[in-house]
Length: 90
Image (tube, rainbow, N blue to C red; front, side, top):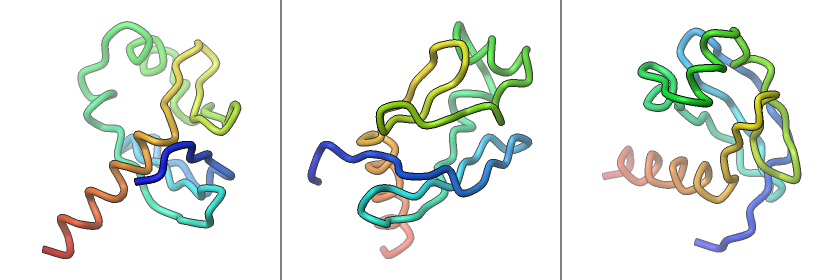
């Protein structure tokens, strides 16, 4: 997988299930499931849950970010989308 991916747009946010639909700069669109980070939150993710900040995410320098400083790399998010697609195909 080519590195250096960037997120172009947040298409939709499902705060209840901790999922975000993203569009990348290469026009790939997919739903990223972040429940593994937020159902049992620690540290910065706990702050996001306690403050009801999940839906306050935004794009900063092509990455997914929250007001408390928590960021997720676009490359890792896209890699998760790719793995999800590959597992569905097999």
